[in-house]
Image (cartoon, rainbow, N blue to C red):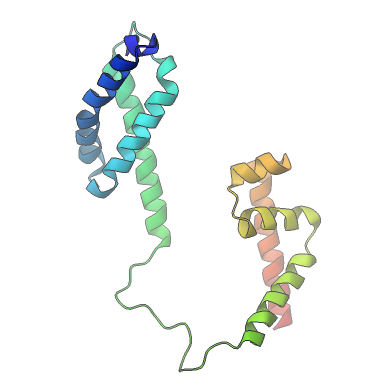
Length: 173
């Protein structure tokens, strides 16, 4: 690692090559999820590459590396848990509509119009938060950067906007 920090590309390539099987074993043992092991190992290698300048050659390399690896395994476990909390596995997908009829184009247009009206009555700051995060699909961090607002502030605005839109739509029906 010291040679890699000094710019030795061959030493860096050899280090990464030597670390690959070690990291695979570590991830499989720690996470117990072989399906995500390759992705987690890649995340570890990206993290290693990103923070390689922080390694202090006077200290042992393995504990430094394993700290990075353990954190990436923990991140992956949190993502897997969050994904599992919101996903439901089913054998047969339920039908969206009862019977053979489907929603008519006009009904779909009416729903879209109702949403547009509910969005239009929101204060500008809440409307902007909904448009950036829910409609355009930006992450909270990206939206915060675009607006100059904090992530927490955007979370509150989205929450309040959804609550207000829900109330507006319930009053309509």
